[in-house]
Image (cartoon, rainbow, N blue to C red):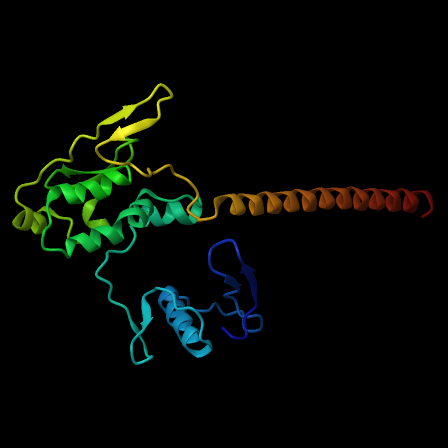
Length: 254
């Protein structure tokens, strides 16, 4: 698509400087539509090639750079993000329940699953700290939001492929429910003593790390759009008035 029209924009609204590209699939001369089949795979591969060529920071994707500095297909043992969670984060700019669980728990869960001395309470403790709870659901395991139980639960194996009864019961014995979280509060309802510290919980917030900076930029863009809209309306009124004047003059002086 080297001959196609495109526009790029550099953004600094996340922790990483990045570029967005929008391209016109229709060729400006032949009017043929470019084939975009498997476009995500092609873009990931092209990104790794540019990272390798220009020495840019390497990012994750369906292609990776191996130890021999070759761009090869990635075969991650982790399951991909569920389609509904992906839609939520893409279209509404909100962190999905899946995204929150992965961010808060996956790394530590992966670490302790590799240890020999593992027991159910250790798994529960990691999830409790993030305001989550591991429960039985039908014939498997699911992760629930402790604060908002009405939240649709997450299939546990989506967080880590080893979080299944078939893989954990042989190692840990029969499933044990999460322990009760006991909290003692003072007169101001502040937690002063607890058997399990809950450090965070899912609150459906914007998924970008610097929320305040992102919100400031959003407001600035909204104000710029409103200003542009007002200018357009003003220019439209002037143009209509001019056309009306020209019409009147042409009728008076044919």
